[in-house]
Amino acid sequence: MRNLIGKKLLGTVLLTMLLMLTVSVQAVLADIDETLGKPAPTGMQKSAGPPVPLRSTPAANLLDDFNRPDGPVGSNWTVHDGYCNVSNNAAVCGGLGRATFNDAPGDGNVAEADVAVNGTDLQYTGLLLNYGAGVSNLFLKVQSQSGDGRFSHVAFYTGNNGDGFGLGFTELTSPFSTAHMKATRVGDVVTIEFTDIDGGAQPPQTYVSPGAPPAEGTGIGIVGYVGIARLDNFGGIAQQPAGAPIPTLSGWGMILLSMILAGSALWMIRRRQNV
Image (cartoon, rainbow, N blue to C red; front, side):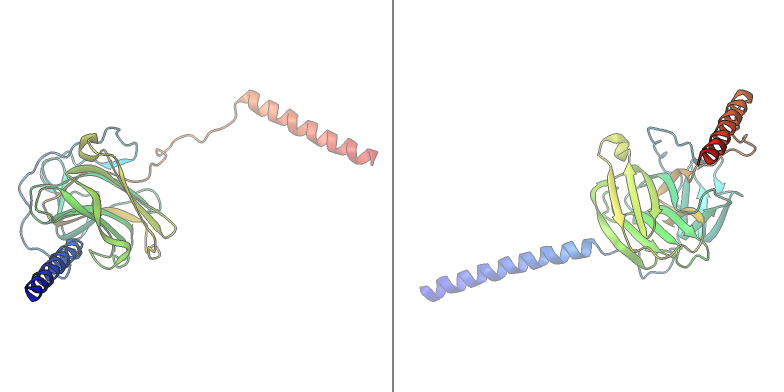
């Protein structure tokens, strides 16, 4: 009887350990990027797709709203890998696509856009910072690989879906379908902020990742895996409009400034004479 009880107890313990091991393995596998180690996808972009919801507050630093006929992304962009196209008034990139906005203002440390998942296929979209030679630029993406039609992971990579830094590839605290994505670099720390998540149905999410490599350039841009996930309303650093007047003092301001300078000079002269 004791042997039978012991065998049942041992069996229960082994079964529990097996279940725990299975759960642990599944948890580890959930954080493996399914797009790594594979050649660039060759499939064409998914036709159209739903509109990308607008953020609640329009950006003053908008560079491209993609509101034009379907086709190549346009002359304001340089496509470096794969393809990037306009589709239903949004941008999609595929074939491990990368594109940078020509003559973007700023130092290449800030970029933002609205992002949206499109269906349940494996997909990502995201932003480029510090693009120069295209080797160690920052490659920052949001990815759907859960098969439920929501973004599930965020990644801090370099190059073109290459080596990671800091947080690397990590699961989102809560999956979502649409959001406003903003990437900012300060020193070697990169922050990705997601706001207006699912139209405001979820609170914002912020991910901070140290250890970014030195900036190789000042370019900013967009990325995509297989022309599925959608991106819209791309922006960077706000710039002063060309030809904007330099602030100057009015006539009365100049008179007042002159009086103050003259009075200060007279006070200094008298002070030296009294010494």
